[in-house]
Length: 78
Image (cartoon, rainbow, N blue to C red; front, side, top):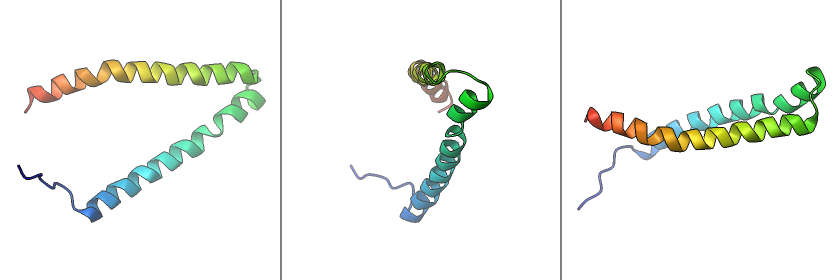
């Protein structure tokens, strides 16, 4: 069976560059989170690191739970 090509190479580069730009902005903004919370808010560095780690773990677990729900809803409209 022949594989279908949905996007041309220049479309992939265009979408990929947009995704890279979005991730650069996200990384730039989140890089200021630790100094802001430790210097301005006055939290200890260990507390801030724990908060960030817990939020990342929570995000990972919720992604595992939400993805099957999204697929089940998306498949209803096929």
